[in-house]
Length: 162
Image (cartoon, rainbow, N blue to C red):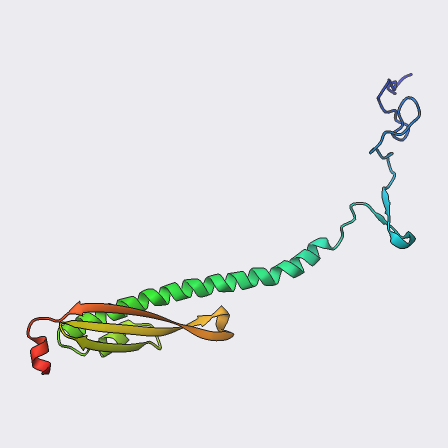
């Protein structure tokens, strides 16, 4: 035989995936043949024909991914606003401790739309800054972050107020 290999025991011949004894090996498919699986009702489909499954998974997963992205962006925005509120509260408390108007200084240093409140209790000044944060792209109600700072009154400042 020229050009063909001899089929030995346990080896396939070139004749459609048959062994030397003429039986088909399990799990083997002859060249050019297609594997079908039976469906209920007599229908047949190609095995491994998962056409469209990626589109279905993408359609189900993409909204969840977008929601996760918007939640992450909201969290980052809230943390940034919180840091800005803390900075503004420190500025307001220090300005009020020196005898200046802490509310004005706090509003100037705070994020847009921030509310600043300053109170003096004994020898301490408390400044609280609250600011709204947009949630999930602005479609839901806003959340509010707040920061409070405390400063000691400078000597002689409390005497001028009384």
